[in-house]
Image (cartoon, rainbow, N blue to C red):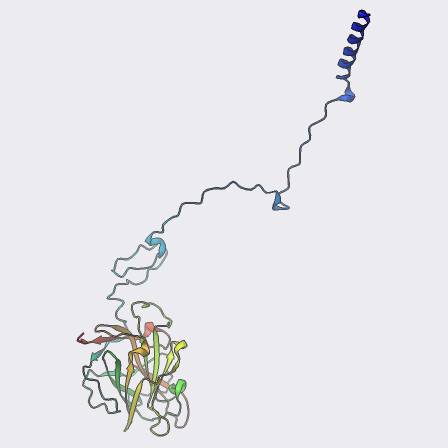
Length: 314
């Protein structure tokens, strides 16, 4: 009995060993997932591991502005290929190269604004320079020119104009007064701040002074620029009087019109100009002369320079 049991065990072991080597029972091939195609969708893209942000780089003075110059007169280095701006020293930014500077004298006693300029004793300046695009109707100083005087105190800018004009015409008012014989002032109140800017900004002003027509049309003042402040200027006092071959005009303009607090030595961009119409009964701009012959209406770099001179005593 014991012998039969041993033989049965040996037979079973032999059968099991043989079955492990049969071809039909070969081990299966391991399965591998296919590689995703990243060109069709981004959902298979590998999420990059977090990296530290790059270190903050503090720009050098050269990197901030390659062509900027300092007010102390030391120029910043300019990369090869770039044209540097003119030296931006305070001296070069305080006076425009157009004509000679005009000085407004401090007036301790305000002038009486009544259309009589005989009491003015400050320096006389002229406005008889033709300007670009002024038309070809101007024939000389007897056709249109002026002598003017300018002064100031802490409250007002004062102006007196002695205008020579062979034919007086003014039938327009308000924003259209330039279509007749008016006086115009341009003032850049931040001369150094935007010295090289050839476009008008919020600190550039243009106002007109009209004598009226010495009948039903009254004298007045109007502000064209800045555009967002365009309006009649009711706080400006304008008085005018006729004379043979022209007229005289006086004005006192509050500094608040220009949003300025005046001081001795303050400098502005400045031009005083005269519009002219020689066709009686019409509203038409025909020619212009100015205190500076480079003057263009919307380019402050073409204006001259005004300097406030004298002490306020404060």
